Image 1 (cartoon, rainbow, N blue to C red):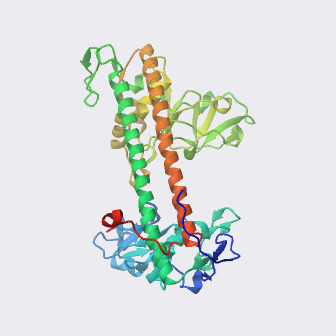
Image 2 (tube, rainbow, N blue to C red; image 1 turned 45 degrees about the horizontal axis):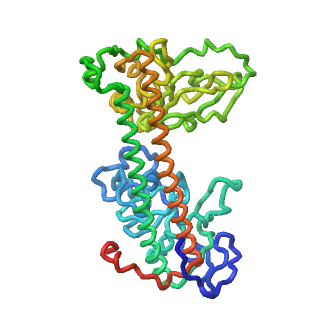
Length: 449
């Protein structure tokens, strides 16, 4: 860990998140630096008259800010002249802060935009927005502002009442210069690890897809499957539609439990990507009303709604309380027959062709698109003998174990870098380190420019 200079004179701020601050810094509330205003939304927000693809001002949603890092450079919608006059206009260089969704996330816009009432903005602090951005980005000013001590509950009053350490303007600029350089270095390292994760995920998908469509023996004779996407398959495999190897969405009528007995309860967030169920939640059978999806041990569940389907949400149900579970209605349930192993079916549902073809057959609009049950039934596979399915499953499990280890290492590195980045920002904006003498290294001047 790099050791940085310390300020020679520090005094207690009496603010938990600030601690001791340099003696020449002011401790001041945000509202004494700038007014805090809230955005506004045209109502009803889904009225098409408020939108125009050629509009002058972009419309900023929470998702646009969530997907951006420090700067907002584009959004997916634009407002009409009517819509922009009913919202709040912001201009390049302005800072605003999310108070809904990704609560507490700051963003500086590089485009003309309108913000709704899920954001607050700071009209009187534009010249020093970069410094204030880093103050919010460290996440510490929000400590103690939770609703009942847990969830953040921000509004113009709570944001305005936040106390920060404010150095002289030249020091603010020095802190911004230092953090711009150091966070760019850290972000580059994080990006490399994320690229590695993407490559490992692509490798997993490719190897699984090849194993369940071509088998493990490259020397085996092949034949035409007569299925366009599947192409050739091993000569001893049988082309089959899944409807002949499994059934979907079994009936709750087969349950033989009393109403007071516990069963597993599985919301969508408990379904893992590429396998795994969180089975912490349990309910008495009698307390579960209608409208939930029933499944049992050894069933394969697949998320049917976008983007959960595309992201690979699905699992084999194992270890269920009393052998059964109820979960989100956004799951398809697949139960194998004798010729098909559940583990093999699960890996089929994780394969690239299954996900891509399923995505192409989704119906519905926008964020409510779903994979139809008919897709599952009509999906064509090459069906190996069960002993070969066992071998393929064993191969994929070993492959997954190796790749999971590599991916976990990359994930751990990212976590450490993110933590270091946050700590560095916090230390700089609270005066725990003195960066007034920081200079960008000569070797990096060209890169920084």
